[in-house]
Amino acid sequence: MICDATYGDDTQVQHSTDYSHMTFAQAATVAAKANVKRLWLAHFSQRITDPQDYLPNATAIFANTICGQDGMSTTLHFEN
Image 1 (cartoon, helix red, strand yellow):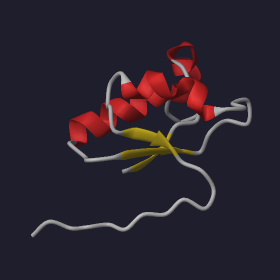
Image 2 (cartoon, rainbow, N blue to C red):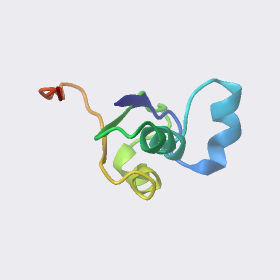
Image 3 (tube, rainbow, N blue to C red):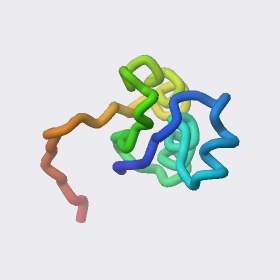
Image 4 (cartoon, rainbow, N blue to C red):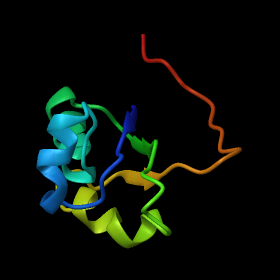
């Protein structure tokens, strides 16, 4: 799952609601509920200089989470 994670921490939940974006934790919660295998966080606020600083806010909820970067790619394997 590739998901919006504009805001790094839960102190910005009101901003996420006001502007229809998500925090890292909100994205991780959606991933956990959707029972996905991996979560790539994307669409970071310009205020976030290093998304890795906020990654624990997501991995505490959904362990298999990474911060996306320009040029990242993967091969998808679909189950029958």
